[in-house]
Amino acid sequence: MKLFTLLVFSLLTARLGYGQSTEYSLHLTSGFAAYRGSGAAGDGSVILVPDPLDEFLISDREEPYTENPYGTTLGLSYGLAAQVQRVTAKGSVWGLQTGYEVLSSRTRIHNVFDQHDFGTSSTGYTSLVNHGITTHPFFGHRFAVKSTQVDLTAGPEVSFLLRSHEEGKAKSDFSTYSTSLNHGHPDLDLRARVNLTTYYKHIGLALGYSHGLTNYRKNQAGVVGEAYLQAFRLGLTYRL
Image (cartoon, rainbow, N blue to C red; front, side, top):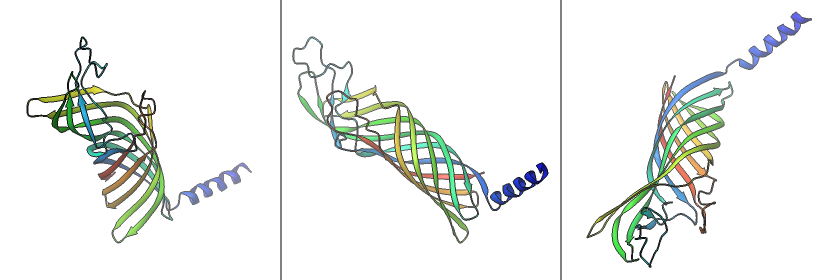
């Protein structure tokens, strides 16, 4: 009986594994990111640190900052990831991708406000750069197109945020102004993600879009509106 059970189990395992393959790959990504929502802005102002003895205080912060750094203008982003996926005989695909990613958005700067609340016309931009470790389980289907393989997949994406940093620079007729400071951020950014990857032998080209579901401004005092991060990716893939 024990021998019969072992034989049935062996045959079942072989049947389930027939025609399936496990693939490992490395992904180098670039692309763009930006915020969307009523709490995001395409344009903004830089506010300078006021003199603490000045009676016309416009800010209680200790360093210059951008009024709203959650920009709707696309900023350059990049990342590196490793992936493992299972492909069945019928073309079903499921797997997991994990990596490190830097997503950046931009806000155009048109004014700088000084200690006396006098606005100075200026030009420049602020980048809000988010660093995170991203995990993306996915499922989908593989299509054979001549000598290439095309994978269409989708799934949730979770970014464990490590840092959110503002870097800004604006120039007027009289001076150059800059900002550099860290911002508070959610611990996790939950997103919905879709991918289209085309392989030719070991080399692949990947396109992707992530739709953020986490409001970055939820716990900010006095803020009305929401800001969700979205990312557009273009990357190279090497299948091991």
